Length: 125
Image 1: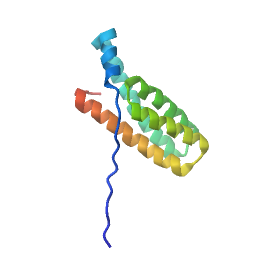
Image 2 (image 1 turned 135 degrees about the vertical axis):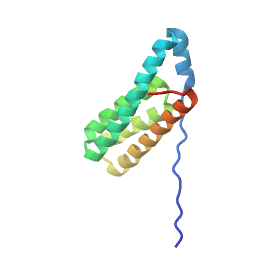
Image 3 (image 1 turned 30 degrees about the horizontal axis):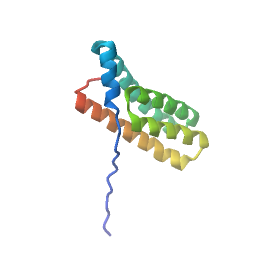
């Protein structure tokens, strides 16, 4: 029997203009600090989302997903915002199979979004 492995990939949408507009409006130093803080918070929220899922704390998971959606919106991570919103909705519906898939997808999309920003912008956390 031959086993075929299918790679899982995500196409992520990031609104780069949102960050560029903020730099022009408020000065790059303040914006970079705020952006870095927001990216750190996204990392922490992704970790918290996975921990809540593993602990079976679905109400905490839904709250984290909501916070993650807001933070992703703030930095222009459009796909992450959409997926986190859906994870929060499914968390409230108690569909464990769908929630498992959405938590995994949220983490993949979050990691991909952060990797793109770090790669393109040469960012350090």
